[in-house]
Picture 1 (tube, rainbow, N blue to C red):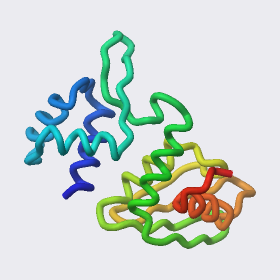
Picture 2 (cartoon, rainbow, N blue to C red; picture 1 turned 60 degrees about the vertical axis):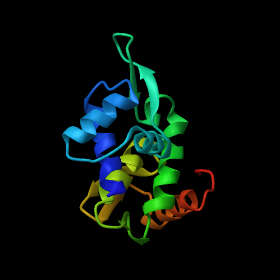
Picture 3 (cartoon, rainbow, N blue to C red; picture 1 turned 120 degrees about the horizontal axis):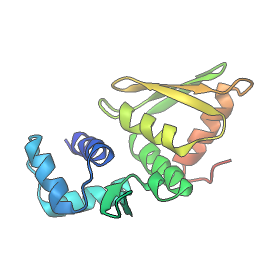
Picture 4 (cartoon, helix red, strand yellow; picture 1 turned 90 degrees about the horizontal axis):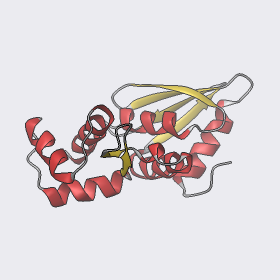
Length: 155
């Protein structure tokens, strides 16, 4: 339930200008989630969401990568620590396993973090295909991701 709720929050802040925790709480309730403002507050903290000014100068919640490039790696590290089940590499590919329903969250974090050597991802329900750039081995990308999951700095 928590993963689904947090994914809904990410979807909401990417598509709507929500500037308060109460606005997010109300929109989650509209989507059928029985939540309180303190729960949303904890979710926002765990997801690393930040308040930024949009083009019209209004404050709104956004993914951390909207505030700084380093925020994307920090979020990826947190997401990998929480959701990574396993990884296997083959040639220029890495297959990442997550709990059911978490693959999209991890794939979005990977895409936003701009990890060196990764050109993109394809996510299913619990599996992500990570595609490495031409000339980059999947094992190299796997080592970088495992390092991030273990709390090491990106290489």
